[in-house]
Image (spheres, rainbow, N blue to C red):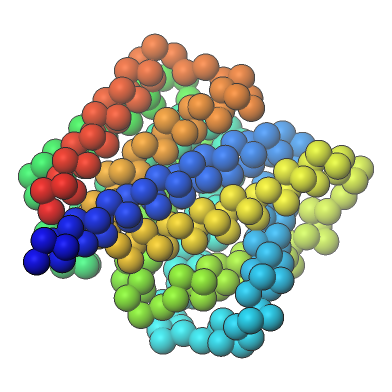
Length: 293
């Protein structure tokens, strides 16, 4: 009985740890996208990410799994999930052209708010007062970082908000499909969707001087960050409910601020740092809620 109880407690914790690793990879993905968007069209950057993603999966998994990699139980929803992620990737890339990484990430955190609001009617998950309070506190931290009415580009803000809606749909569908679909299969479909949507646009976008070797490596890293990040992301939903993982998403802002500083030299303002501290507290409350089961 004791070991069974421990196992039940360990499953949500394992899900949270996988989710935190995914968030770090997503922050690296956004920062690299921001860096490359200064010289290349966003659509091309997103397409290259999915091409590398698809090639990596084809080389690693197709020899052992063959066409069973494509086998699904709910094909329609798998495609909708993949298209939601493709739309989110494009919209977030366009937003990152106009906003700093940390600020864009903070605005994108309306997505986990939507997930928590919809987790009960869509997924039937119970949301305790502690978890709900953590979400509210995290949202206050987001507002402190974003500072509505400040100097941020309004079009960039609107685009990132649209990306957040797509991201919420992706997260909810990840939870819905996690019980019937394999993570690697869903991951492969996301790569196929991105290649199919953005590939036909490449003849009109591909031009100019060839990328440097550094940029080639950065393009390749996009597929690694995105592919591995979404693998961890999907696996996390097998161990923990969406209403638990959604508030933990706020911790991505800390990763975004760190990678934005290291790569782009962007230093958040004092009010933004206060917001990040509030977000850290919200993450601690989520962990307490998880331990209480």
